[in-house]
Image 1 (cartoon, rainbow, N blue to C red):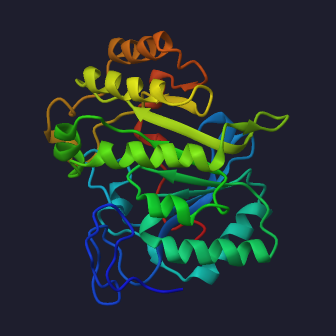
Image 2: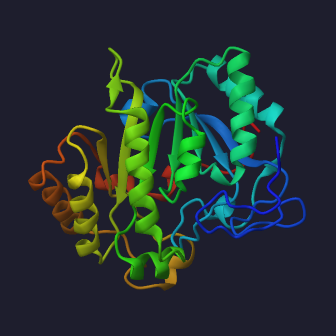
Length: 297
């Protein structure tokens, strides 16, 4: 496993020598995670009845001002481990009955993750691997994960470069994300379910509706509707809560209204985006964010 000396793992291409310093993502030369446990709050085809074996990685290439995972994505919470321990964690989650292995925001640790997956598979890991991502991924990252990732669980946060620049410090977000999700669909193909309704392969495209930004949500849905029919599942999320810096920033300092979310859902239905999931408004609660207490690490 080679630690990047001029890091280009994420679209920021910051060029950090990760043996000496942290990259723009906040990650340096030691793999770091914050939680590894069965998780029951993903889409039903991911969580199932026993839960998704979810590993939350520290660091992130985005800097979303409303991030619900900000203690680990932007504030460094986590514990240092190596790729062998990560492989052990994958196998332990499998032994606990996890339906899949769910990697949350892992790309800043891509070389470590690839090696851990290869080790775990050589030792009996046989679950589908879910790559849970912001969608801000390079095409090279998607390509390097071919054969290792079965399910892409990807956000499409914005189309507007103004919003993505203001809220996530990434004006190129949609340009990058739109190419990445098309590569994901091409790589794993149309959704495949088992007899219990659990996803075995495919792509889920998530969109978190933000308060005060209906027009951009419509543009996101227009893009989804332009993709090949039946090549992915749609997940429309109402769980936005004004975490972190969003509490001081209008219009993000409030939860989305029922009317706003209904407008997003109705627009998706009008576009024919009927295969997938919607959330109840009760999902917008802080208790839906897991504690990052190093469980399972």
